[in-house]
Amino acid sequence: MKLYYDRKSKDPTYFIQMGFRNGKKTSTKNVKRIGKHSELLAIDPDPLSYAKRQVEKYNEEYQSGKIKMSFEIDFDEKLSSSGDAASGSNLLNTGYFVLQKIYQDLKLADYLARIGEERRAAFPLDDINRFLTFARILDPESKLGTFDKLDTYYEKPSFAYQHILRFMDILEENYDGYLEHLFANSGNVVKRNTSVCYFDCTNYYFEIEGEDADFVDTVTGEILKGFRKYGPSKQHMPNPLVQMGLFTDGNGIPISMCINSGSDNEQKCAVPSEQKITKMFGGKRFIYCADAGLGSYGIRKYNSMGGRAFIVTQSVKKLSNQLKQAVFNDYDYKLLSSNSPITVKHMKEFDRFDEKNLSLYNDALYKILDADNLVDVGLYEEKVFKNGKTKTVKSKAVLKQRIIVTFSRKMMEYQRHIRNAQIERARIILEYRNVEDVKKGPHDVTRFIKRKSVGKNGEKAVDHYMIDQSVIDEEEKYDGYYAVATNLEDDAKDILEINSKRYKIEDCFRVLKTNFRARPVYHRNKNRIVAHFMICYTALLIYRLLECELDRCGAHFTTENILETLRNMNVMNVGDMYYAATYKGSQVCTALNGVYDLGLDKKHYLPKELNKKIKKLLR
Image 1 (cartoon, rainbow, N blue to C red):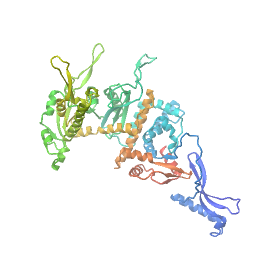
Image 2: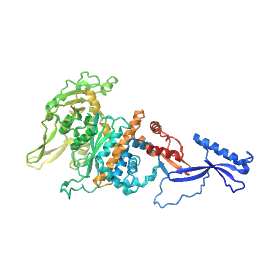
Image 3: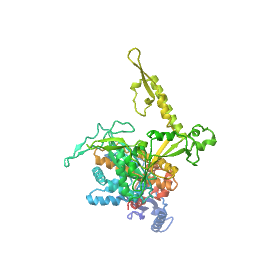
Image 4: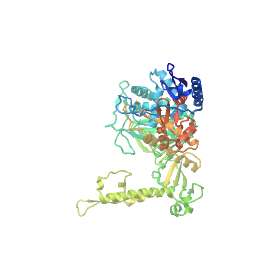
């Protein structure tokens, strides 16, 4: 701060003047009026010396962080004109400072700098990657939508839209190296728990007229498969798909991913992805954990070698008759909590409303079965004939494994509650609708409806529809039963505990699809589709690392609360003199500032203060 006055005036007015640097813009403003020369004579015979002492005092107050400013507000002042079609906001997001702290620890700036030098890129790869990632977390839109809102971030980055597309091409070309770098440096943030690796797949559909056509490589003559293809989908969407496979560690933090065509068998992507992460782990042993759809013979066999192990969900219905008899044989069951003998019959019949039985109601039974013959567990493999043709046949190979069967009274009642509601819907269909007009499927309510054709003396048969009690009875047999297959000899409780945490990978998919809006994907070229999901993956990794750090400090919040806080952490520029926070304090805000010590919990910030913070985070 310095003293300012009109030296030519006979009775000058003394002001304290401050210089401001806001980005590339530098300005000076009179922040406090000391008084006129004639007014100050009543206080001090030397008004100029008095004014200088006031400036010194003001500088001391400024150093302590508490100063008083005075400025005029003209309520008649109009907005400056603009050529923009729509009015924008003057708010600037600073919540991404928290994300930048984790991004900095991942050392992506160094990695992208090396790629930029190799490719001689004339545009900022790191800036593009940063803000595409942050936007996916804070304001997920198309790449063009993100480009249009770059001025809503405190740094106000500047790069052209075509540079975003070119960056995506470069990112996809470095697919494996990029994912390996993320994993290797994620240990800088939290200690990775890679003793267990969870794997699952999900689909993303595209709203296009038809699937991508196959085409011939003009150089090699090889037939290359289109990327967006029709395939099975849980949502039964009649659209082309791409498939994402995701590996997470024991804490639900992503390890790696793969992107495949929608028509590919998801089981075929597990082993190639595992081979990559085995290399990333340096040969370290781990347990592969997945659901039944990703527990084929080939996957189980691969994870029975090299010190690896597997825990996969096993369908009780697909077990051999001999193993089913063992499951329903009410002997050798033990209580999971205490290993004490108990029967399924007792679990089904005790009074669940008696408070003394509450712990038993929340408990489960288990039994261990040996099932080395893969025929017994209903697994299939591809058999290749001499003529080159393949056929899927039931596997007769031998693989050391155990089946851990559990029974839960709570799960049994839940499954029957769901089925009873479906049966009621089936009765309504019989009463009010034409059964033939109802969509049918293996898990649809129409599975409870059977048709009976009746005709007399050569007359044309008439169809009658009714509830098929035999189907209901068959399904009820399996209520409450659950099974996992494993080649581990560990305690059953520990194995079931590992398997119970598969929900974390499902939650990753929920965050990607719901919070980060990974679809719709506004790209049609394969390399840019893959790059889009690489950006989504980076966003997911950063968010999970953030969540893990909060959890480690005892701060547990929902995804929605964390993201809402980061999105609302905006500041407003007040006359280039200071920034005013437009967000309120919260438990999440307090926890974030406690973990990362960024000091983003104040009402007002000087421009140089925020500039200093972001400069430190960009080192």
